[in-house]
Length: 73
Image (cartoon, rainbow, N blue to C red):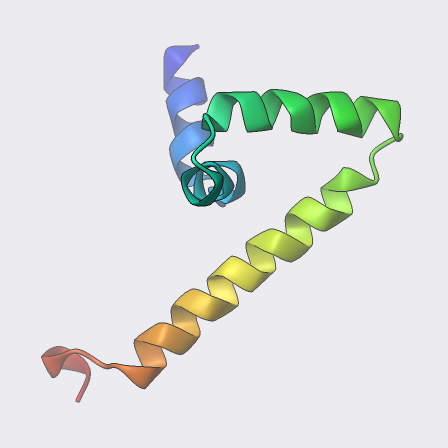
């Protein structure tokens, strides 16, 4: 069970962890509030989560494109 937990925390987008770093707030609390909000609003925060995950990936690819490493030249 711990293996699954570590996989989910490390590999699934990282939106809550990144948000926690920016706001200086524990990621586990953000995850917990996200779960509460999801159940109370019948799943609508999932759309926001996916948009944030997409935006984080686009930013990462854009930064990598603007400053390529020596191996990508």
